[in-house]
Image (cartoon, rainbow, N blue to C red; front, top):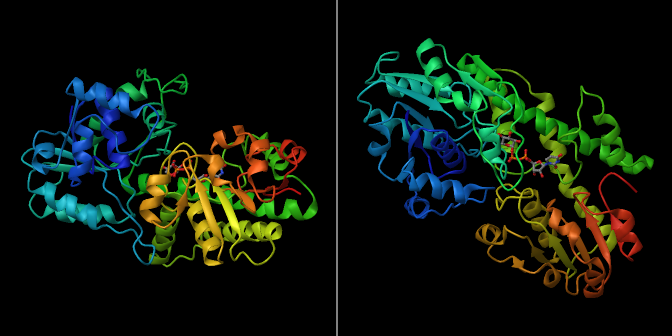
Length: 450
Ligand code: UDX
């Protein structure tokens, strides 16, 4: 099929376009960002993702994917058009739909034959009506276009793996024609015919991928409810962590024991700094707005957010327990800027929020991250960063671990101890082996244990 992806240089658009190209479609990704489009056309991905550069080069070479800034080039030849533009949080938490509106207003001018318009971006329930209105001004639904909601469930760092080997595919539409087109579009994935290998060995699994064909609104709610549920699990485990450290239990043991119940499961139960990143908080805020807009009080959802914010102060007070109450002029080394491991993304990173609080209290922060320093410097130009982790700990009063990069656990802590002013670690991700670190002479504080 011929596919156009609007917002094709952004995270979701790029993964979607590349994935569709790899499974045999002809894809044109269009984006307003000239810099990124140029970079992509020369074979370099602006985002870090396992296996992305080789996939990009391969599909550029075969002509399966192209990148352009001209909307018409992507729309005119395409049977299916994905809208994958950003929907950031507006001032009040409501999703900002200006990029969606701009994209749809642009594409309607170039619809000359039937198109399936797929909403890939996470957009509030009700946006479909807006898109329909914009398209219906000059086109007839069912004849010139159909709208489908096809939410993404891509985890950053594992986005390509999640694209090729998803847990499920959700297709929301009221009509048979777009439904069968979407089924055909994803057929190689649904039937597990894709053989894509990243650096990490991907388990292709067996049996068909579950395909959920439903109405548009339910499809959108599946996305919001999934992210809200994941966020709830994290706020739950962090709340229990606060309690385990008070009663003398260890949250890691508690989570391990809980997870064996198949109704609970082990994944997504690591207590720590709480959830950050461009999705969970934004989607939770948007869902709260959707509830309030429908005269419904989202009591639980609001407390999930509130609980998450509390983790910042929890970590700050743990740092103060080590350094004394006054942080003024204390040197605090920080390992981790990205919102999670295996990404250079610092958007809504809890690490940056903790750093802001440390600096507000007068601490001198020296930060290190294996990948995210350039991105962090864009948002916090004054931040003192070191490419070498051992440089970042020089003369510091405390080392705080804020991102769960496995590489931090492999460092030479005997060397780190010699470089620091005082050997103290606050591990906000429960990443290090407490017994080992204590044995090498550090004061160690994790989350949810004594
Ligand atoms: C999330 C969803 O997982 C994905 O399905 C969705 O479509 C996009 O949003 P992502 O934002 O990439 O993906 O991050 P995710 O891996 O879910 O982690 C979110 C945050 O939770 C990170 O800050 C991470 O460090 C934290 N986290 C995750 C924990 O603190 N503990 C855990 O056990 C898991």
